[in-house]
Length: 391
Image (cartoon, rainbow, N blue to C red; front, top):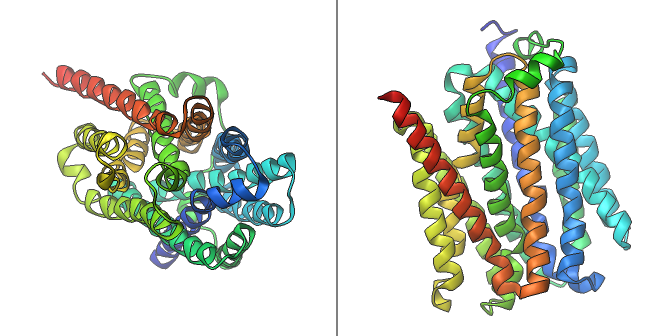
């Protein structure tokens, strides 16, 4: 692949990694601040879930549109718009106190998250085709690092009686840095030269060929599982397991810290073991951890964050699998994949909140266990089909 220079290629690789760090940090403040947010706004679990829904509606819309925009205007434009939307969303959360303005701010923030998800993943796939499985997992490590730092930062401020709004305002520093770096970096020619018109008829046919629709469903169920846990684990541990603010937010940090470690280790294993096989192994282990953490003795609550270690590799490995299957209009197809991820992110935490209002938090939080079971069954079926075809 021809690039303007190796320096430019690695500048954009590092920028993509940093964008994922900012994404992980900003996105996963919401789980840490949720108890304080619900108390301050006097919202029920269902109302809080409906506010959070805005993030995932925005994420879904962004990934669908950003995939098309990436193929037409380039990945740099997508990432720049993502940073601008994140700034606007955080500013709204800092100012508003009513349901609809808060939900709209969350939606705008979600537009930024979706742009980073699509733009950075697409850049890595484009610039590092031969090593995309490893580098996608390594980039996700940066998301995990940001996700791990966010609850520690939030827990420290919240334990000192600072407002949840101030917690979000601190993320503006990172977003502004990202925006400045994006503005200063020259476009990666290899990525931008691949821009191509989107043939919608052909895209509609190729995007749903073979087993690709299964991966759309799997990524939706996976994200519902991961985000359902991340959004509600702090409230669950405080209410059901009796943990204080500091320890419960540390458990959310541990969840993402183990996810980061898992992706780092997984980056060296995915190509050797095989995409589907390693995802099935990881899904089974994660399912066991969540079940023990919810229904086991109270002292085994740490199994809940331990599930992050095993969940870690699933998202980037699904991305690598789908990008292997489609080389034309890759931005649009990855955008469609991440749109299904947005559906999962929208449905997962929302259903946990709704079920918690109806059935209590213990059973409501167990919705994530149901998602994990469906995901594991789907992966088992796909691996079985793959083994049959190989014979």
